[in-house]
Length: 72
Picture 1 (cartoon, rainbow, N blue to C red):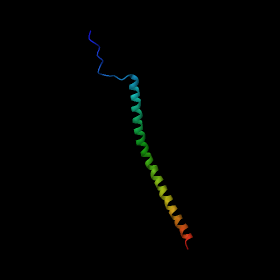
Picture 2: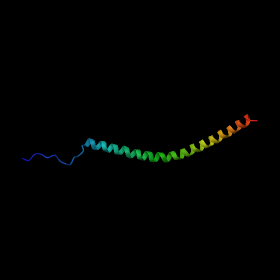
Picture 3: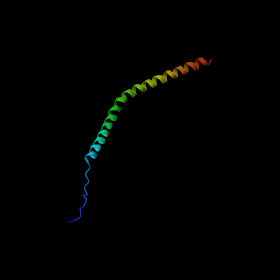
Picture 4: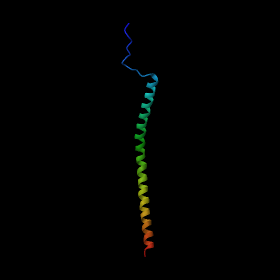
């Protein structure tokens, strides 16, 4: 009887296949979450940028008012 040769093909166990499938599922969900989440945030960031610009203008005006009231 010839000696037993191990198979060169290695099959993953069912547990390993399920873990690999779960990891792939999580990665795909993260890709979609980041993709769709950033599109929603772009609208909010525009509003936030407008608010920052408005506040910067108010601060600049108030600084000018304070400066003009202090200097004779």
